[in-house]
Length: 354
Image (cartoon, rainbow, N blue to C red):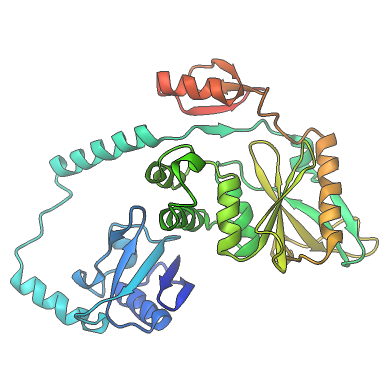
C-alpha cells in the first residue's frame, strides 16, 4: 500500500506491505518526519487518527480505516512518543473498560443509514462513453526520430477516474493512485479558500471536497491546475475535437501531456522503438511521460496524434451527445438533461447512447 506523508519537513510517499503493522507505519512516519511524538489527521474534513490507542502489532489492514492512497497530515505534539505506544496500549487495556462492540446490528445499521444518506446527497453521475473499437484496438502512433522513439496514446480505463489515472501515470508512474490524488485536490481546496471559493467551484468548498473524493466524480480543469502545482510540473491538455492546447502551471521546466476527448482523459507517452520509429514494441513500463518543456517537438507530435484521433471521431461532443440512463433506458441530449433526471429519479448510472 502507498501512503502520502505530509509533515513539517515536507511531503513524501511511503510503501508498506499488506502485512505491515501499526508499529511499521509509526516507524516510517518517524523516519520521514524526524518526529517521535505527533498527531495524525486524514481525509476531508481532516479527522484524527490516534495510532497510540491501538495495539502496535495490529495490522494496518485491520484498523477499520483504508489508508491505501490516503494522505496523512503529521504535526508535532507533546506527550508520549510513538515508540512508547506499546506501553501506552497495555496501560489502557488495564485501566479502561471494554470498548463497545461497533459491530452491533443497531450501531452498524445507524452508521450504514447515515452513510447511505450522505452518499445519496453527494452522489455524482456515473457516465460511461461509447466504445471506439478502432482506436482502442489499434491506437495511432507517430514517429519521433528525434527522440529515437514513437509517440503513443496510453488509454486509461473508463471508470470516472481517468483524469487522475492519466496524471498519476505520468507523474508517479502508476495508474492506481486515484485516491491519493483526489485527497491532494481536497486538501488544497481546504487550504486555499480565497482561491477556490464557491463561485469558482460552483458549490460550497466543503461539498466540493466531499464530492471530488467519491470514486465516480470526474476531474477537470480545477483538478489539473491543482495537481500541476502540487507536482511542480506543467500539464498540457489537448482537446481532441478542437486540437486546442490548454496549459496548466505554465513555464515549468518539465511537462506531461494528457488527451481530453470530451468525457475522458488519456496520456501521451514516448515508447522505445527501432527505425523508422513508426511502431512501438515496448510495454508501458518503459514509457517516458515527463518531457522537457523546452522541447517543442513532443507537443507538436502529440497534437498530430490527436488530429488522427479526431479523424477517427475519438471524442464526445458534450453539447449535443445523447445520454442514456442505464436504469430506465430514457435518453437525454447533453449532460444537463441527465443531471435533472438523476435529481428527480435517483438514477445515476448513465452512458453515451449507442
